[in-house]
Length: 439
Image (cartoon, rainbow, N blue to C red):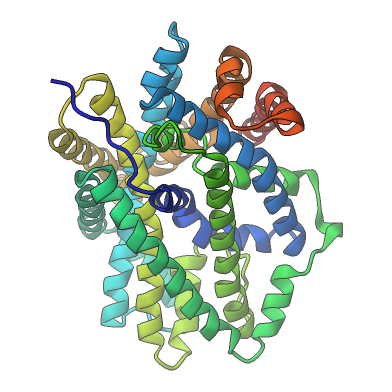
């Protein structure tokens, strides 16, 4: 007996779920420090330019392909083209599985730091102590795995509910909560003495700092901050009803994703400047620098709890989309029931994440191509599989199924012509440049 395919209950739910997938941890911790290292406002302008041109075009393509096929990426390639094309969908799903395995470990760190903030052990102005605290936590053989399990279970609980009652309902709760927490922290950050200088440094463009490397960083962040390259947006697009236009939804998703990134900068830059800390401190900014700010403020413990809860929410909105993407392979291709599929996949992801966690501690001497397991997983997905998948999706849309995309895109005239050559030439070459740069 055939079951009715799941669908979004509302356009708002689709937009919020897709924006949640795009936001993730990257917008909160990566965008501010990458901006700090790349000339502030000049980098922001490039990031916005690429997001609303190449990024929006690629997102529209993925939404349109999914909606046209009404199935996940493997089924979409099989249905629209056949041949070896479904292997591209499988590659994207494999990339999402590897990504989710180590991403869940990082998501677990945010849960662990909520607990550390509650007990007050991260509230210190001694950056050396904070570095030791972070090192002890991630190198511990037990607690990161426990928090990894807790994060995977949280994701599982949402995806078990299905598209409308699980993912959409959670997105309508989590995304507004994310914005409210960010706005609260921004208000507190901007009221600090000297905060205006930080906000000014964040937005003031230094065009003398623009280099080819900066342009590449902005382009890469614009593409991959929108969750492009694994097929996740194809999967989300497949739950859109055929008569629902996706252009405006894609624009909203890009807008919300960019807004969260800029709000993250406004939340972090003024506070760090007020306390004389370096916003370009790198990935450790989140766990080893921000607690210095909270330790120096009234009600700092409450602010720290809110901050790490915000990080956990951002991580969760992305992990949900990863698990749902992986599940589409079994839900669509093999018509298996959701509950056992999602349970089995969550267990598999947890088990694959354990070596990634241990590679930062007891298994740190194990090397894969000169990297520990965690870094090797991250590198293979971010620098190889996602860019390669993005190139192939663009070429597929521009050359293999362009008549279908032209019919379903909702565009005409010059915008349609631009989309065509973006798929055929601009996007593949741009993503290839990112791939070669990162290699």
